[in-house]
Length: 318
Image (cartoon, rainbow, N blue to C red; front, top):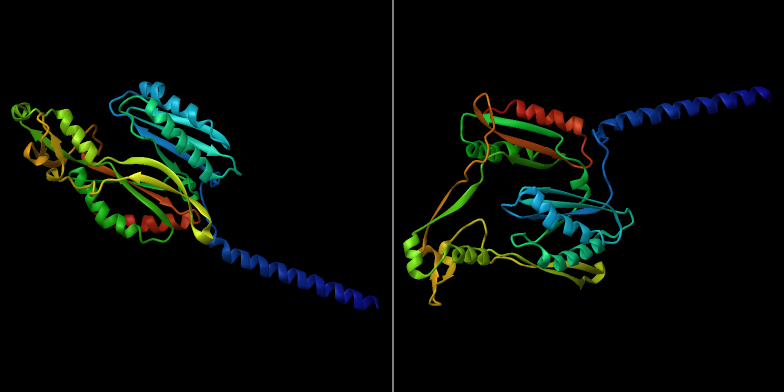
């Protein structure tokens, strides 16, 4: 009887050891699939409110706009933390919500507060824009950044990177977003004859207002609609331009003259597209440079992904 118990205990111990070894081997096989990262993920909901105030110093932006918006947004229910940043010509307010807060309800409250507060803000402040923080956006910033330089203008370097590098990198599994910056953006330049404008009774403010109205975007608010089985959902209502804002067709814009008649903008100005005046220069060994930043997906293995990215970038030659 005792010998049978000993054999049974030995068999059960052996079975346990074998099962443990099998589970351990299975775990080792799954290690490459784990999302390895440098920093932990943030999962708390939240949103940010951004606005612009061109030509204004950071101190004035903070005193006249950011502080007012921040104080009003602090009324939103479920806020865990609120912070703000002001810069030259812009401001941003970051709001973190409680884990149990309803993000859609908080967004509705914030949009209502902004709509009520905006008329009290100084002239020149753009309508504040609300951006919700999703898990993908909160995962972290770029996990890899590259500087690309060449003996060419920054805009040509950026175009090459957009067409040849970004499109190839975007095919790699695990990449969430690729950003390219550093080149001076293009702009539309309007040249006019001041004497002709004075004769027609048209000022530069009239032209500026006509262009602004043509491309105006106006937020109307949010509306609760019934979506059948999906239940009730909030939708965002806004007035947007009828035409593509990336193109500038002066013949579609009408300007009012002093006698009340309308005249096409193409009869008043000469339109050309060119690079903006550079505000700063960044060069490495005398070569112009741009920046390429890569953001990984929430579940991506960043260590394995970085090896794939480095292998491709190492073979790139401009």
